Length: 216
Image (cartoon, rainbow, N blue to C red; front, side, top):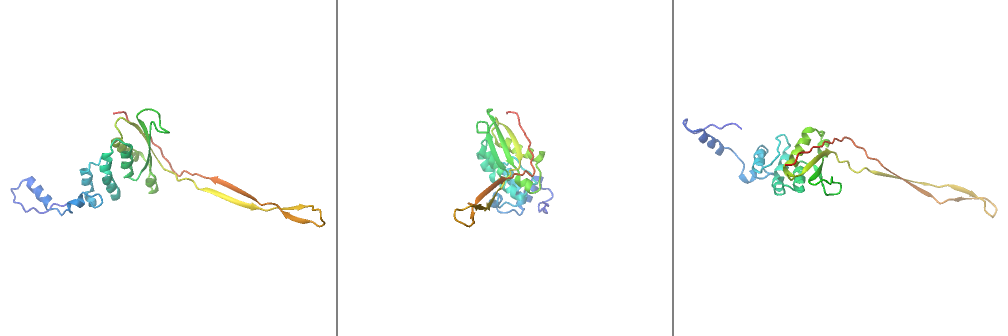
């Protein structure tokens, strides 16, 4: 941001000049600055700092920055719970399945959990699941999950249920029978209906990466 021309005398101090610059900035009204939906894009980083956002990247799209700021208070209120993990990852557009050790499909080892994070939006936008993305997700889980929990993060793509194709056909067959009365006649046998079902599932791209940290 360019520095405004100072109106103070030459013997003014650095603090006085800094205060002058601050009060002369053309800032929006204070309520809008504290609103994730109304805050100017160039001030979202300052809003994230004021809301104690734990993980922040300047290269995120503006809508993602607003969503992260909006979910910060909820995440801190629920810190240390599965809901906090889902809220923080959901702000980035990731669907999450969190399976704790005692739940069906869990490891059975106390204080462990598995976090399955689906990056369909990233892959659909042409991105890839790389080490940087896995490290980002693991960092978010680390600051929102309980400190005593050993967690494993898996990142992949959630394939939609494969369509089931049904194909039906009717076949009619003429049968020649010998009746008692003279003269031959043709009878139609009962129609047979055949239904054939098929299910096809195709994985386009998938990458899995496991991350585990030591207990605090």
